Image (cartoon, rainbow, N blue to C red; front, side, top):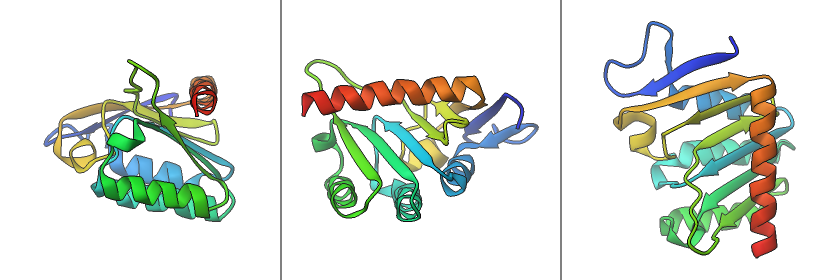
Length: 161
């Protein structure tokens, strides 16, 4: 991987050096060996394959940290699944970003503090396939710094709960 790779969804945007977002996220999560961190504004039921990959990662000992904007406002099935994972799967943490008058609108996934996807895509069918979205796959120090920011956001959520 170069230090930065372009990612996209939407008809005609991929190819010629621009990779599709969903398979890159799938690879990132599947290949993680120690840690996966994610921040999501919206998680739709159609993101079940990605959540299932995070669950599998946690079950093989990878520390999974998921920060979700206003968990209670997410789809009911998504809420139930995430709460179940947080309760029943060691190494799987869900943090509810629910600060007064503030939203977490970021869409980030970091693997092993070495590689990260940052972009506009929500964890939804539209974000992964249907919409026109743009993102970046970054590595090195930038991925490490993104992971550190997610640590800080997760800590803020712990203080609130």
